[in-house]
Structure formats: C-alpha cells, structure tokens
Amino acid sequence: MKLKYFSLALFFIFLSCNETKEVSSLHHENWSKRKANIKATDSLEYGKSYLSIYSQIYSVSEHTTHNLTVMVSLRNTSDLDTIYLLKANYYDSHGAPVKTYFKDPIYLGPMETTEIIIDETDVAGGTGSNFIFEWKVPKGCPEPLFEGVMNSTKGQQGLSFTTQARRIK
Image 1 (spheres, rainbow, N blue to C red):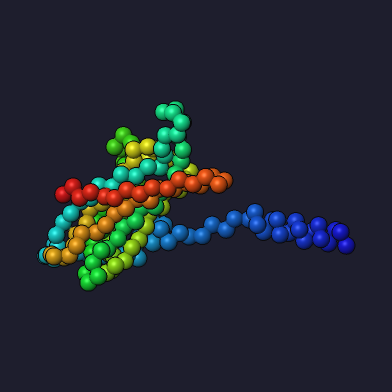
Image 2 (image 1 turned 30 degrees about the vertical axis):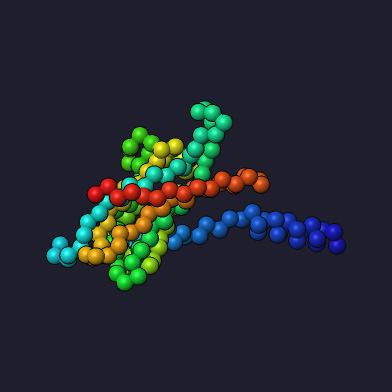
C-alpha cells in the first residue's frame, strides 16, 4: 500500500516538474498575424518615439545589479481609428541593436494593446536599454502610447516601476 502512495506521489512530482513550453502570443511568428499593408498613397502621419527601459538596475553599489522582467506596452489610444506600428527596435546600454520585433508593419485596432515581454533572465539590454518605435496614424488621430513596466519579486520583496515614451519625431 505504501508503495502505491509513494508511486502516486512520484507521479505527481514528475508532472509538476515537467514544464510544457507554450507558444507565446508575443512570439515573433505571431506578429505576422497582425501584418498591415500600408500604401504610399495613404494619408498617414509619421512619428517616432523613444522609450527607456531597464532589464537590470543597480542594487547596493555600482558592482551589483538586480534583474527585472520588462513588459513593454504598445497602445492605440484612439477609440475610432486603426494605427500602424512600423518598427519596434530594442537597443542595449551602449546603443547597439539587440532585437527587431517585427519586420513588416503591424496594426492595432481602436483601443487595442499588445505587449513585448523581456524575461528577467534576459539581460542583453543592461541598465540603460531602450526602444525606438516608428508608427503611422491617420490625420487627427491621437498618437500611440508606449510604456515600460519593470518588476521583480523575490520572496516577500517586490520592486515595480514604469516609464513612458517620448515622441522624438
């Protein structure tokens, strides 16, 4: 009887340790589902925004860093119009490109939001990482909102803060 319970316990332990890796809705292959065809003749206004994010921050001294999970929120603030995101380029602390998130323009419907997640273990960006977003909106449409939410939790300690993009063009 003890062997049955022991075997059953081992089975449940095995199931809990067996990680199933889901295909993320943020995976690059899923950006293609949002692909937009923008014609040169469309009367859209162009913009460019800069967003600072932090995949690491200094802790205790300049020699110790603390890793953070980053959620970059890309939001259409219009309740009427679809907007178009042309590029989402991620750069490290030294200004070197880390990743381009989509190759073709994508769309966001009215009031729609999508995210880019940078895992806590991904420290390629460093303490001064940032994004450049290029976008197009219909004339008179509010510009998109780009925000970074950085957080980390260890035990009962939690750290969380946000940043907002600034339009640069």
